[in-house]
Image (cartoon, rainbow, N blue to C red; front, side, top):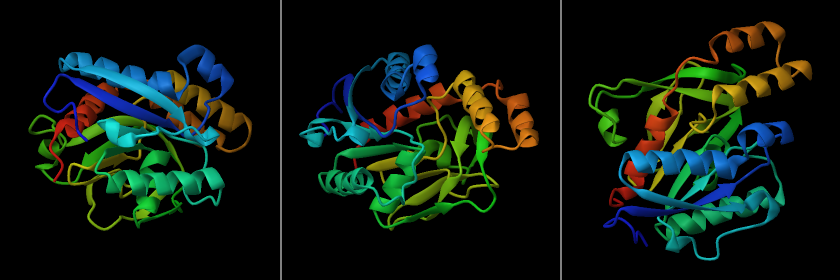
Length: 255
């Protein structure tokens, strides 16, 4: 039920798929604050009142009636969408059920991958390695900007990334809207019912810098690669712009 399309308000359920590191939560907040603030602020720029309710699906919390929301948004996570864990399998079934209810679904990073796996696509570890930090994402066609509610002539988006897995098979009915040299499926959509992206519009450079430093210290990232990412991590990104695009997408009639 898209109950808010004719009003200036949106009700969004944020499905939280992980807990960020405690030191990140202390300085920047956890996923509910990051995603909620991003969407609320984008809403203000569009004259919309956005209200977000958060559900920690990683801990078994779910909205009782997802159809009462204008959209559900799946967050990022350190887990892999193909992990055979009970909470991940339950989340995939929830995505299938919610899609059948024709409630709009938005996915961010892990959420993007969960949507792919749940609806018939495939996710795997990228043989080209990690995609981290400031990332230039190419829109697939000249008219793709219009499909995202963006200004005509926009050919790329700059966003923060933090992933090693990527979508390798797109579900039936989905269209790839953007790519990079490392990951072909950066943004995908199914009409105006599902929209997902591999990057993190909610991440600021401070969060990404901290994650790079932690993962370099633990040996996950090589020092040379980390230096390259850190050199450009403070470049300006389009997180707020894409958040507005998400809200525009949610308000479109489903096809």
